[in-house]
Image (cartoon, rainbow, N blue to C red; front, side):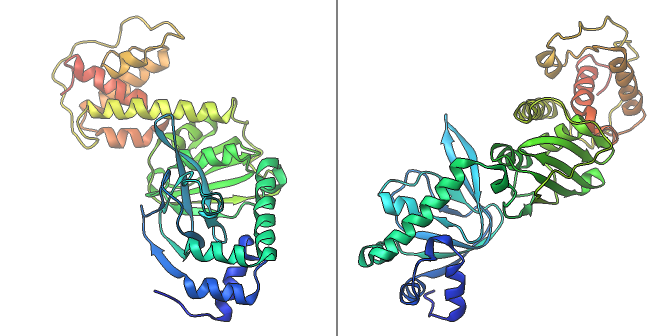
Length: 356
């Protein structure tokens, strides 16, 4: 739909740093030549490697930029209202450097690339102004100053369309300070991850705190909504200890746990399955596995072994509750920090013929 000019349109276009140097006549040309585009979840705005064509200005919503890195699609950042997509490809003639899609929904304003190019060629001052705006943006990105990170626009969305781990990776890489809040009903209310210059310092999720809470939030596909609010200074809880270790290591640990949990779930009945005890064999009194021994692969094949006495006690609780008619889903909900262990124990009990 081609739109006519209006004062409100000009005000909107001037919010974009790229167009701040344009006069009213140039803005009128852009507005008359462009169109508003409403996009739903999954809509691809531009695709990596394709020729440059149009320029898009984000009016509302958030876009997600992804690149193919070593054969995998990886999140490289978000694009917020007032920011543009595709201007660099138009100016350089290079193919699109990333695939940009809409995770939830967005309203865009599309400007034909030829119209944008004609404006730049027709007026040197306009071209210089656009170049200056791009240079300022690149300078800010290259500096990666903490004070710039606190000015990040609010990021929010539906967890159906965003991955918590990928959102956190963006906060880590861009050294954000602030609070990521998740309204996630499965964990009984709100959860929070607290960032200081890209480090995950504290975390809360229901009854979980610290390292266990962070791992749970990073590895679990949650429903509900999330919101990140940047702050000038760190405002995390002062009554609990900091999370030890690096945040990227935390992401990797959570990804490994998620893979193990998915593999275990594939080998077990659904979380609502009611098990029956079919053997009274004692399979829990054997020797403990040496501390530090990597038994992850053994666990996912149904050969779980306790490492400490606390593990054996957990296994006895799992057996007793499942044999009494409890479901895996309800059991995990009560002990979410031990989800992987509960699944591994259950698979071992099934593999050894104790439960079915």
